[in-house]
Amino acid sequence: MTGKYSSVDPAAVERIYADMSSRYSNRGDIIKAVKKEFHLIYGSFLTKDCHARAETLIRGYRGEDIYADKNFARRLMALHVSTAERAGRVEEIYEMIAGHIRPDDTVVDAGCGFNPFSLPFFRARPKAYAAYDLCGHTVALVNSYFERLGPAYRAQTLDLSERDPEAYRAQTLDLSARNPETDRGVLLMFKLFPLLERRKKGRAFEILTSSGCRAAIVSFPTKSASGRERGMEAYYAELFAKGLPPGLTVAERHVFGNEMFFIVKRDC
Image (cartoon, rainbow, N blue to C red; front, side, top):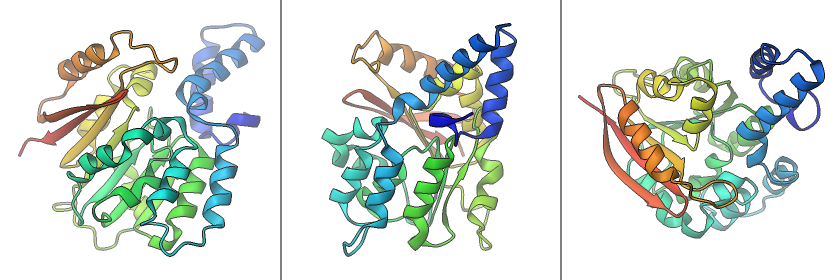
């Protein structure tokens, strides 16, 4: 894959190409369908030159502490459609999120996008942060941002429709002192559920089950990209309630603007 999608995980490209090849016989139609699929699950969230612009900002940062600079975080988050949508209520949203993350937690950010740049809004930095995304450009950018925080903060390219983040967490972070009995951490899945379920029904719930995290914070869009509601909030609330696997319980539900959050706890 070249151009806009050149840095997408090759495994994802091969998988979606094979899928579209089973639906279409003409190569031109296959390529067109593959590009359409990647636009829906990835490209539609990117603003123009967002990776280059974010890299320029990060490399040129001259402030005192990039990880405490909320105004700088807002500038980075505004470059990605998903995080930009939180702009008006960013303090309120991340105050809620941070309330469920302990200083000794490992955060597992599945389908991270530009969300790792929200660190300045956390009450305290988590002990470790493992971020996963389909796009190599995004992963490189997040690692550039993380580089001053050490090996416990890393991003990795991963096709989450086929591979579980839990299997890669220790490898990604290289945590020699990690205790699997106590370091269960928190899983973040922001607006990822509909994308995974589109590719493979039940896949998002599989990740929730396999994560091993003590809690998960899951969000869904409540409006389409064009701003139409289309009953999305009720639809996703019902889908999530019906599909939640045994052993997991919804502890809280919050709606901020066009995003609905569920706080999921693992039953002891």
